[in-house]
Image (tube, rainbow, N blue to C red; front, side, top):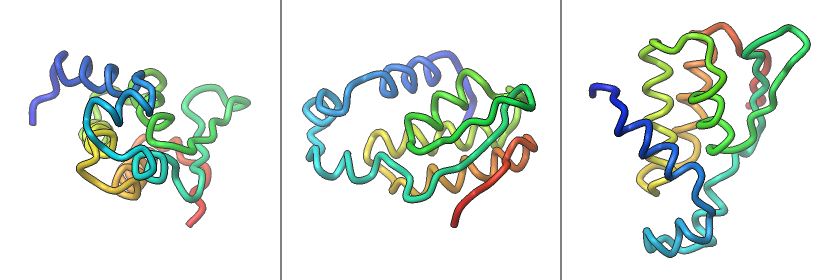
Length: 117
């Protein structure tokens, strides 16, 4: 899949929409969306300076980091993680798919500090 501006715009639109609005528009039950939005275990990364660790606890957190703070913008694994986050937000995949893709991308970028399994 080619990464283009429309995909970025779609991810930003989905990521910034409130959960209740997303559930009404996409006809996903609110309980299901809330249950699948947060990771069971947090992921700790260090995307920038040494003294600035970041704890990622949800798909929306992961999407925000991937879009704004990622050190390797052209990484194929980063793009796969963004696609996984988008699929979870659409209700097409379970939350663990986005979490696992994010961990793989963070390892590739060498910013992963801790993953709790």
